[in-house]
Length: 308
Image (cartoon, rainbow, N blue to C red; front, side, top):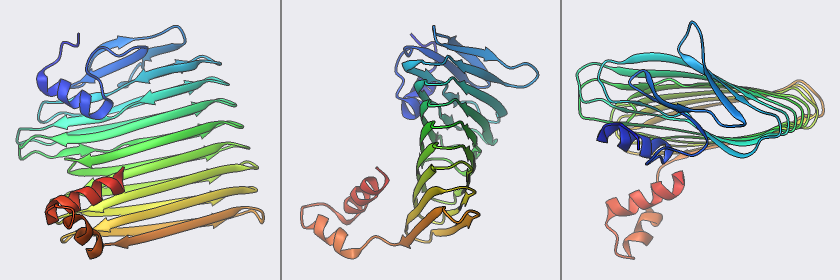
């Protein structure tokens, strides 16, 4: 069983669906310390020297395994920067579950900056899930600044699910990806802000190899007085295909700025961007209210469906 507080267990469940010791390889980090770690036959987790973080080595040909590396912070005033590098061997097929949860009931800011670098081998497949969550009624902020770098070899595939739906006061999210020939990247970002929260997301995807492709979709909801900014850039440096989509709902006095960018440096690259920002349509709320929901319940149903 996990020897953690009730708050830490709650956070683990929210960000990684962990209720007990997970199967396979894992590292659970709590309040700046690794509290539980296990490698497996095909996945080795090693602490870095000189800086906080880990190297995770996934053997070529590994199939059907999972790696969990969640982080929880339950003490006010903790500020940390962690470097995790993933080396995924050729022809591997693996699920990586990360994420960070902060519960801050004190007066001082708590902050986690996680820098994750993925080196994805030829023909390898990776699904990466990163969830961020904040709770606690203290005056101190809950700050999360993830940096994700993805370097993809020929014919590799990476699917990324990036989720932040509650309680994070400030976040700066930076994602960089370089794709070689035949590599395929799919990103699904879901983000909700409320009260005075601010969220910045920056994506730069470089399609460097022939027949490489990227499909990046971001959905956001800005409530109360919160603010979101999305900078999303796809660069086509070879015959390739790139698609981005920014779809946002604005509520109350929220603000959203979408800054899409497409850069074509090859005559045979095909790049497309779609963007939409608007409020919830009144007829949607009316329709749900005829089914017995209150206006507030109708709004929640629409938002939950939008962010699913």
